[in-house]
Length: 102
Image 1 (spheres, rainbow, N blue to C red):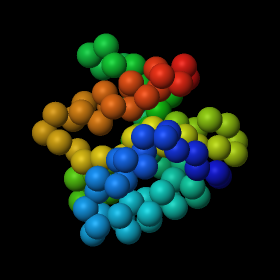
Image 2: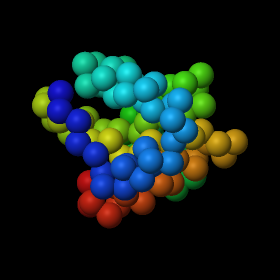
Image 3: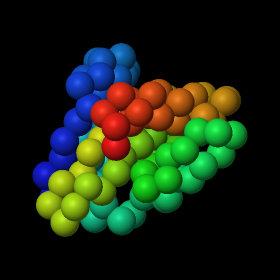
Image 4: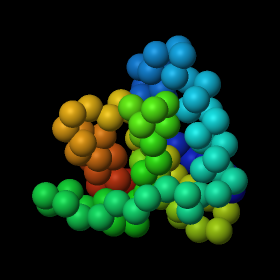
């Protein structure tokens, strides 16, 4: 699988602590090899992430929101810390998906 990244994901990664980045790299490799490992997201509280998946890493403190585009490509929509408000990263991903027009 080829990983594609929303342009703002670079900022997401730049904002991560240095000790987290190697674990992100490992998680991205897992997604690349087996994208179906993620858990499906849906439509909650008016935020529709149907068709997207999430995968946690680094003791479930961080997550990646992504979408399998086809048999060859995966789009990474957002990467970030999983705050107390679980929808925080989803809102970010949701806005990015809306911008691209899915």
